[in-house]
Image (cartoon, rainbow, N blue to C red; front, side, top):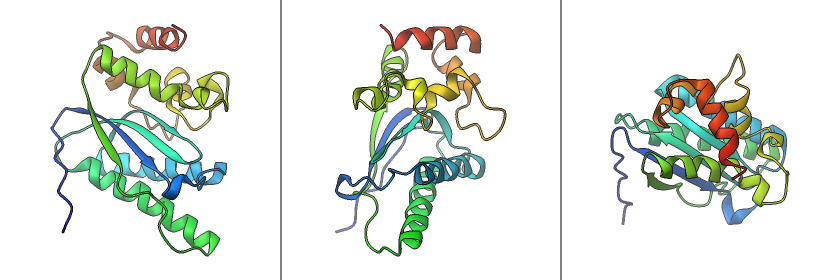
Length: 182
């Protein structure tokens, strides 16, 4: 029996989680985490994916995205997950599943729920005991939010700030720094 289609609502925030097959540490090397981020950036360029936060761990990925109603999430996940898996399997001369089934999608409300989801994603590697502060994990949105790079930016900080109810990016960044410590 075929799988049911996913229906995303335009403008809705979504927390996406995608795990490696059998919870294997297939993303344990920085090279592989960078590859996933590269393909996520390509999805942003090609399809207009709105990334609000992310973390790429050693065995799973968390994304906070907003749907624009044009099938962007499904296309973006197919590109990022598919290309990452293909590159890894080719390089390791490996066959078989890379990802554990489909990604899991949870609808997120705005306001406090959105803020808590941002913090949950930011603190993922802290809770795992890998780093003491989210700024220490290179493959996460916390660093990008606090110190936006000039190139290859995944997170649209202006949209994220407005979605969180802030008039400007500076006010949002200041509040964001406090959320994880409270």
